[in-house]
Image (cartoon, rainbow, N blue to C red; front, side, top):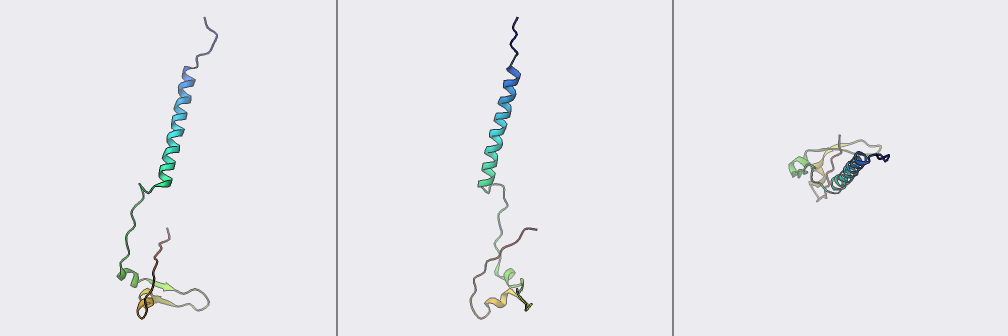
Length: 84
């Protein structure tokens, strides 16, 4: 007759929780540092960029097509899409 409790189930539970925590940590690190599951961005064509309407900032509100920026002179364009 033994008065010591059986720690077998407790030990198995601790191993399960520990392995689950390690798996969750590895998964989090992989997802945070890679783009494995992100969709690939599409490249914008020049025709698409020319048709975008731009608005000026400040007191004088003016709306114009983006193609006007490079009709006479060259321009460097960076298109950023905000989420939402």
